[in-house]
Length: 293
Image 1 (cartoon, one colour):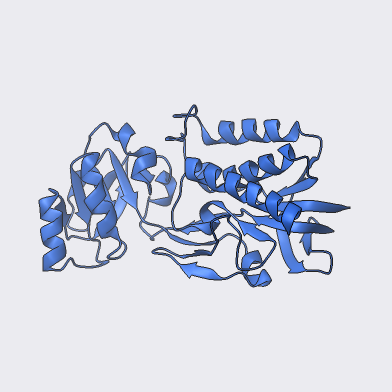
Image 2 (cartoon, rainbow, N blue to C red):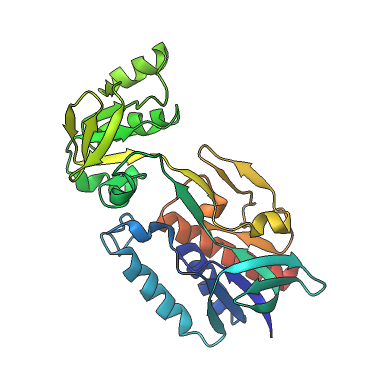
């Protein structure tokens, strides 16, 4: 069966894109392998009407609402391959060959975290990457930023608005004179002793035996696209501060006509709210492309 569009990725961006197409009465298929990027987070914040909700509840409600539209199908699988075809595009997923006139890439990204003992166990619980998503709940308690590169300066300069901040360099980089002045102006404490491990809620054990307790910790992950499909199709990529993402225009169309992208796979940073907005634009852009070519 041919579809008007196949949406690869059924998290917030993909669900939002699919909803626009469903409401335009287009036949669509959503392919998803159930690995939302924020599956480790206990709560989601900053999304109107859903502030403080568990992420899986938001995603589950969105899927239920989407599947109420009769032109929508869902495939629980990983999309393994996609390529251009005479009629549009061909996608291999779940052992099936599927065809569509348009593709929406919403497969997200994978996070690669620094190898600090105890960090992964606390990811999404007391170790975060987005101050807007999780900073308020720290109630102005002490905040630690784990350095991974000079990019950690961005975190360290932002986070004093949420609590007294310590930048733990952890041997990743050393601020120059100008950077040190910027940190001092924001009241950031610099800790040079490397980290031994993380324990308790958010307790840093340093290699000299000292322990520092925080209300929460922030760290920049390195990201990679969760699927090679964009590269298989020849979509142009952009170099972001922590990883590559898919280049799109104002309608979320990629460099390949007929292929749209949205969510974390198509921007340098994001959140649930931003992903939903991106998805809505991608869905509308895809529909207009079906109408007008």
